[in-house]
Length: 257
Image 1 (cartoon, rainbow, N blue to C red):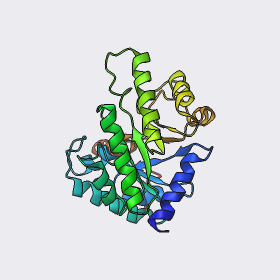
Image 2 (cartoon, rainbow, N blue to C red; image 1 turned 135 degrees about the vertical axis):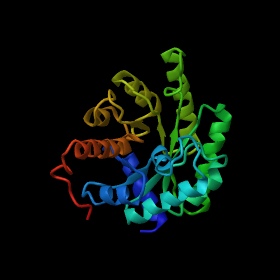
Image 3 (cartoon, one colour; image 1 turned 90 degrees about the vertical axis):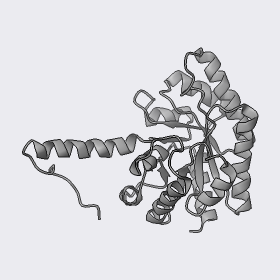
């Protein structure tokens, strides 16, 4: 499939009534492993995980070309599966960055980083316009940092901020809005009620309602951010400790091909 076809598939999966579960990957081999699973329909990159792979901290500390180069490697390993990239806050130019990302990805997360609302809406519009210019119905999952970075603000004010931003981003052309945080059932219900069904994306932190419940509530998508890399590295650390203690590689370890 070409990029436009992959984007159309990714968009349809976001608007379907079924919850879209996306596993985050960070390099070619992790992408290959997840893509080989029969139930995998799409892949998502994790910006934090890609940065860590190269020894950088999170938050656009990694050089843009290095980050986008890994997105392209993930897309190559994914074959015909659509890929959504984590573009952090847009690296200072979300529209041009999205144009570069379209070489591999057909969707993206872009953070609002609690910028003034008008600036954040302009970022959404720039990403959508970049996709249109490339002939790709780019799937933008516009990230809202209000709850994750709310600090000591009252919950009702933080939630109202998230709703205002979410509605504005959807009106500007975002396919869905991503509200990270350890959201409880009541908060998810409130967000779906305000934004509409199949418009909310969440991260599968411990304590967030399970996938069955998220589907019942009308959530469009769930991802796992850097948690999947932590799972892999925890297994590696446990294997190292086991071998140092006199053991060997754990039984049941599978080949990757």
